[in-house]
Every structure is written in C-alpha cells, then in structure tokens.
Length: 196
Image 1 (cartoon, rainbow, N blue to C red):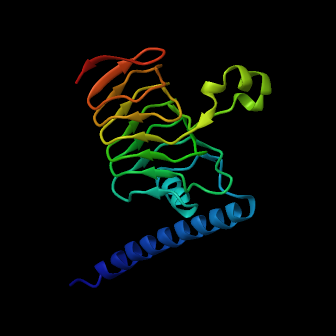
Image 2 (tube, rainbow, N blue to C red):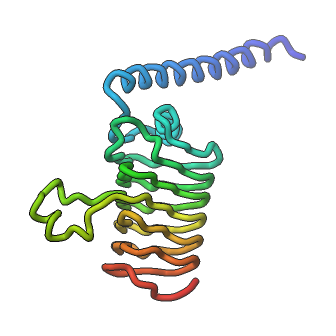
C-alpha cells in the first residue's frame, strides 16, 4: 500500500462522515421544529427527507424504492400521518393532495401522477344548506389504491373508493365508485372503458 493514498482515503472517509452528520443535524432540526408546530402540511423537501418526515409523524412508508416528489399536501393531518400507508416501489410525482381524515392506502407499485387528489371526506365546508340537500354525498371513508394501479394527472379519487390491482385511471377523471381489477376508467364520473 502506498503512503500517498492514505490521505486520499482519509479525506473520502471524512467527507462521508461529515455528509451523514450534516444530514442528521438537518433531520434533527426539522424534527424539533415540527415537534413544536406540528406535522408539516406541505412536504417540499427532497425524496429522502419527505419519506423521513412522513415516518417521523406516524405514516407507514416502505423503505424499498419509494419516490416522493415535492410538493405533497397533507390535509386533516394535524395529529400526524397515521392514516397514510405507502407500499414499496410507489411514486408520488408532485403536486399531490392527500386528505388524511380517514386512511389512505397506496399498495406496492402505485403511481400518482402530478396533480392527483385523494379525498377521504366530503362536508361541503360545513355548509348546513348543502349538507342537508346533498346528504347522500356527505361523509368520510377510507381510500385504497391497490398494487400496480396508475392514477394519471389531475384525477380525483373520492372518499370510500377502491382502485383495483393494475388498473389505470385516465387524467382528469373523477372516481366516485370502486374500480375493478385491471380496468381502464375515464370521464366524469369515471366509467370503465376497457379491461387491460
């Protein structure tokens, strides 16, 4: 072994240690800040930090290839992210809105395109007139998006729905009913167009 390589190896090791120490300081500062003010409403950090914050406040996020692109808005989550579960190999492509009034489950391999909205409740902003006239639409229920499902840009998933395995929801669609396995749905409200 050459003596001239020792300083280079030491420098690389020192850089790695410093990088990890700075990352831990950053995580620590974020955790202290959000312990005081509560969980963040909007995740606007890098993928690693977004996943770390979700886990720190109670979400179940797989450690296997989950990509969480910013920004992600988390609604009705002032007590934490316990109602959120994200499986392995899932992708949230940014500008996503997740209502955590009830559980939201994204199983393995789920992809949410930019602008996807997942709602678990509907209350017409506590407007008594609308809630009385449209009482059949008021309520809250969990949403499940099963393994391998793809939700395209600006689609809206309403409360109480389940998207079947390997299904595809077209961009701009509003899903108000369950989508069967391996189905392609589109429209307002979304209807089955074909089987995949």
